[in-house]
Length: 366
Image (tube, rainbow, N blue to C red):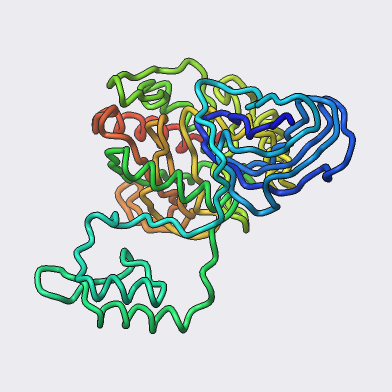
């Protein structure tokens, strides 16, 4: 028998969720015929068959989380272990993971708990990292476990994170652990804007001006070697809120595109995200990020920088505010801005000059 294993899908991803099989056991298939669909890094990816032949066995079911290198399909024929097209070394294994909540808080090694409480937690199915200790010196007691069990008994059943929400949880945990984040905030007065101005396009242009003033914010940081790579093109990640979670598709080379072209690209990108047909490569390779959360609510924020990028610009809701104009109070239209940056790479002065350049551009009429 020939075994086909989950190939490396790129970007260092180590697992994927099986969405749907495109074949059945006993079916004869051709080379490159769709074999299955998996979801990872917020995109659904079709995996074609590496060979022609008869499908003997499927190793997983829809909804399973499968690690890179785990077996997917067994074909009739001479034994040959095929790990597919991979980038780098893949550690093969036969483990197919069932969904289970992942603890992102304290590690189990840091939890201090008496044996009776640990045994009770196993009995009541309580994750000890969710328990606030009340015992001496921060020790978890059986009463602490019972308290959490009572709370959990009144909640809905645990809902494992899947697809985009799973990727979001993993990416945010990685970013929080890796980045030395700092945030500066200021306001742009946008009284000069023409009626009906395209806010997102103006924000993109302002971000480009910020990168022109301080190119070091449009870079990737290699933490292992403490090296930065300043990038010539600005490939902008645009945070898009969807019911399934947060998506960050990438709008390419925004510094060299006119407003009409940018608007067409934004509209197409958002339509692809809504219909879940956006190609995986369009979710990768951002050099800096924009989050226009003000379209929903909020004034200021501390957005999360996702490595290897080093900066994200957040825009809050435009509001009317009394400002001093020509020595007298007057109502102005104010756009709040929040710039989070990786302080390992970007200095406060560089971040300030970036933000100042963006604010100056936003003050212009067009």
